[in-house]
Image (cartoon, rainbow, N blue to C red; front, side, top):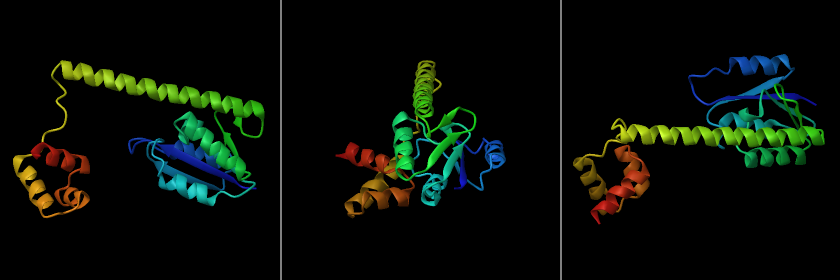
Length: 183
């Protein structure tokens, strides 16, 4: 039975050092890390962690919001871990999937983490609306007419949208919008 740690920060401006130190202090023999949003389900460290964990292991995190951002994500993870005989513990919260009360507390914390995320998104949207009203937020700069001509030229040559986007260093959505505006 091994203790395996997982640490995550959302941006490169943040440091993993404190989380890693706490996990190592808790006896984690191996610690997986990510610098990515929790909503990103394709996190390399997280995927490596899931592949590494074995029956009887205990997954340790500093806080549950480091491993999952929504209640559904957390419940899915907990069910996956439980079905593989893997326990989940959080150091800064009285959480352990070994007991009914620990699982209930885990679910409550996940609800509050998701609530906090939704409030943060609402504040961000309010800030953007206020900036737009004040004329400080103009959105993304439109693509030039030359780029639009390049898009249409490649599209007429039956190039796939992905190829056009990659060649012109644009998003696929921008390519679709440019093609649709010409039709």
